[in-house]
Amino acid sequence: MRIMLAACAVFVVAAPLRAQERVDSDMIARIKAEGLERSQIMDLFNTLTNVIGPRLPASPQYRQAADWARDRFTAWGLSNAHLEPFEFGRGWTLEKLTLEMTAPRYFPLIGYPEAWTPSTDGVVEGTPVYVGDLDADGVRALGDRLRGAIVLATEPQTEFWAEDRQQPADVDGIRPGSPRGPRRATGPAVRLLQEAGAAAVLRPNTYKHGTIGVLGSRNTQNDAVPAVVMAVEHYNMLVRMTQAGVAPTLRVEVGSRYHEEDTNGYNIIAEIPGTDPAVRDEVVLIGAHIDSWHASSGATDNADGSVGVMEAMRILKAVGAQPRRTIRVALWDAEEQGLLGSRAHVQQHYEGDANAAAREKFYVYFNADPGTGPIYGFYLEDNAAIAPIFDAWLAPLRDLGAKRNVLEGIGSTDHVTFNRAGLPGYNAINDYVDYDVRSRHTNTDFYERVREEDLKQSAIVLAVFAYHAAMREGPLPRVEPGQREP
Image (cartoon, rainbow, N blue to C red; front, side, top):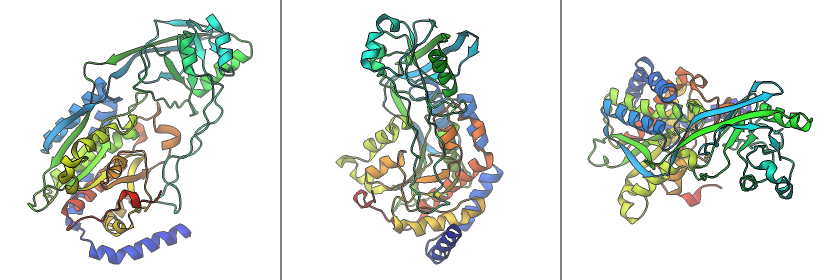
């Protein structure tokens, strides 16, 4: 009942405010018709997830995705479609993995090397050495037993991701963002295993049911111990066999390749130029990160957001939108490594005295990530003054599943880069069912995780918000960074 009353209160308060904020019903109808009846989004989504696949920065697959997206923008008639480089570092791809138990019975094991892990020195075979319950002195005492060995590096993992984050579009008073993660199994420092000359390190992850969350560091050294993250059930089995006095025999081989011929990251940029001489130099930006981790095709993180902003731009071009302000699209690289693509863009175009004019012309940024499926509304970053404006734009989209905007903000994605620079950025509220516990950063984040109707809806919402921002009279109310609630 409390939720229903809250929803009614939002509607009643917003109703008179919508009369003050211009909403172009005819354009919304055209956007909906194009996005629902002539959508190209499933072709985009299939290409990005199934044809191209994982998109680790500076890898050949990422560059394939970047070239493809730029070429799609050009084919749709967008202006100034180009790749915007920034220094990233070497790329990495996995070319081979063998991970199996050969005795006392044969059993294929599930795991994925960490990104940027080096190759093993050919096939490594033998009885693994368990060190999860040892301290540093205990590891050193093993001496030559670790040289050339396969190491079980941690205790069994017994705590797991248990629930997804709550949905702020449904429930008042929750704290947006990722839920608290489980405690990771402990073990000695990997540095000690490297010093001891271990050949490969195996460790568990914090997901269950065969789901594997695996990341990696671009700063991994060439002489690091090759590291493989395993399905927790399989890792725990090996440890418990060892503790029971059974000596399993494993066969492990990692074949990886570093890519150093081009160490740039690449953002993908295109635009629909503004038509009003008074404000055409002002920029409405929509974007999403197109990079992903390597153990899946990155469907919910973040192919769905990427094709959503792509389709939004295609829709606007197809319906003949003539925005007063320029509507620009950006697909960011290296978000997963620390928002590096959006940070490079902001530093190049909006920071420093030389970019003061461009900073003044920046109108708003809409970001699509994290979560999956439909857009329910936007996080308002504690900007109460913008609520009636965004509420007015969202109201005509309730028939497509839009719910409400929320006052709170959210962190850990590319709009934060803009907010930190004093530029207004807002992130979409998406669906989070099976996102935190199943798909994000895991080996299960594939095409099947996303529904066609939800992709279509998200593109329509982004197109509607971008268009209305580009057509609006006057500036949007801003909240200075120091005024945001902690």
